[in-house]
Image 1 (cartoon, rainbow, N blue to C red):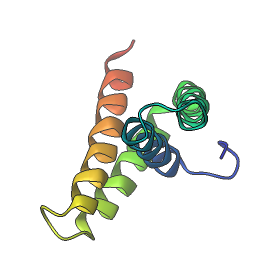
Image 2: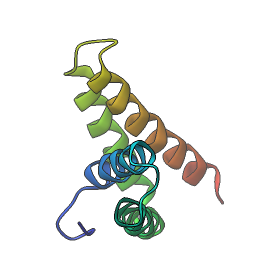
Image 3: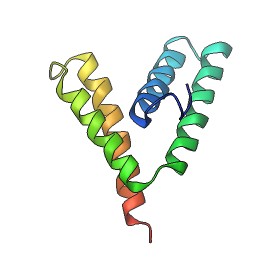
Length: 96
C-alpha cells in the first residue's frame, strides 16, 4: 500500500491491523516487517497530508465506524482508526 493507491484512512486501518497481527503472531519477523513498512508509509502519508486531508480521512474513518455494529470487534477496530486520525488532525490543527 502507498499514498497513491490508498486513502489515509485505509492506510491507517491497514497499519493498525498489521500491528494487531504482529502481536498475535508473537512479532514474528514477517509480520513485524509488514507492520514496520505500513507504519513508515502511514507516517509519510500523515506528514504529506494537509489539515483538510487529515480531516477528510478522520470523517471517512468515522463513517466506516458508524457502519459497524456498535461494540463489535469491527467497530472497535474502526474506532481505533478514527481516533488515530482525529488525533493526527487535532495535532496538525494546533500547529502554527
